[in-house]
Length: 279
Image (cartoon, rainbow, N blue to C red):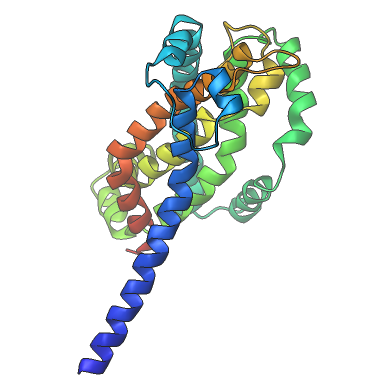
């Protein structure tokens, strides 16, 4: 019995070593980000890559907070809240009939949605730009909501269809026997039972929408309409950039996402595990 135990212990040591190496690889950029955000521009240009700053005074953070950071933050929160709410609602509405009902166009519609996952967003920038101008929402935060919902919808529907298929049909059939219609069954049974899957999608899509850059760059011009990914533009010119201040912007921008993951990681894991189990 000693030999298998030794082999298992050896494998665990290898796995632990790889985990430590991966932790270092993932933590090094964040460490560099925080380190640089406390340096002056002179220290950044003359010092080493991981050289400690002479002073840990948060001058760069004060500069960022006195600028337009809170305006960018508010825009990001509004865009995220509206886009994510609509995305999860529309995804659930689309996934329910595709996963629980049988009708003639079920497979063609589902196949079209899955095929839409392969469409790159960059080929749609010009059409979306023209549409936003013609509808009068160009250079507003409302121009960002439509693309955020549309381009994250196929993946969300694909995941939710698989998740809803794992929900036992006997529960829905029992509700129908008691006189519950499809509309009531969705809101009273399927939607509540899909909370783990919706939470997983919320965290995943929340990170994607929060970091969205392409559409923000194309569909907005003024500071009043731009979100946090473009806050760095306030601290760079045509031929130069204040890298330490930009690093402070990036550090502050990452705080909401880190908090979202810290408080939502249990729901993320539960959603992934629940979607993997057929019930």
